[in-house]
Amino acid sequence: MELKIRLITSFFLIIILFFCYFNKIISFIFLNILVFLSITEFFEVIKKISKKKIVQISIFIISLFYILFFYFTILFYLYYSSDFYLVFFLILICIASDSGGYILGKLIGGKKLSSISPNKTYAGSMGSFIFSLIIAFIFKENINIQHNIYYFTLLMSLLCQIGDLSISYIKRLARIKNTGNILPGHGGILDRVDGILLVLPLGILIILN
Image 1 (cartoon, rainbow, N blue to C red):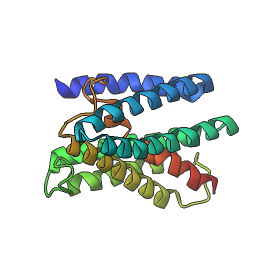
Image 2 (image 1 turned 135 degrees about the vertical axis):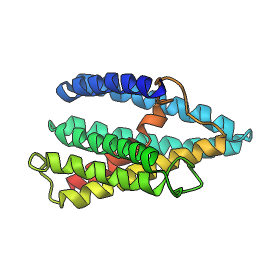
Image 3 (image 1 turned 180 degrees about the vertical axis):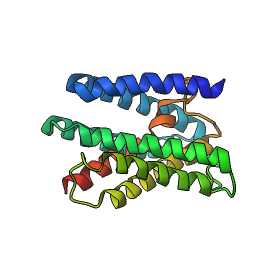
Image 4 (image 1 turned 180 degrees about the horizontal axis):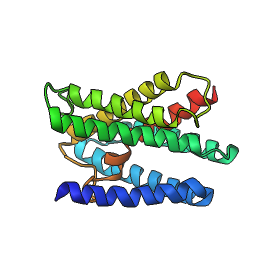
């Protein structure tokens, strides 16, 4: 039942992504909503980590910088470039990385990758890399970058997994399973975009350089 709900939610997210691909205004609106909800969730999670104001403020400043780095990089790219295709490609890598990690992690299981997130396994990590490389193979003729697309994709998948573990670490500190419940089957916004927040800005900067 949970998987069914997760798939339905993913379907609606893909529809939103489809409209963002063809319309910059929708992309801008969705980006602002995404950032606002992410900051709100960060704030709520941080309050559960510590009651000390100095700790809350310190973590919130770091989280805010993390989100704003993502926001202004995407905003800059959307404003100066008409090529949303590369952003779409990076998002697909993240989706493939998450899906591959989830599927192979469930099918194979095995040794845990880290104590930060007990559900993450080495098999799942390999699944993330493999599924991401499939996306690179499918889109290799349509992506124009000055780097080897397979090495680039492996790096993006690694960053996606690091982003995932980073949010997992914060959730562990807060002793919560999900950052929210706005996305049925997925949890909160941060549960869904944990890897994207890191991959999109760094991927864009690498591509532009």
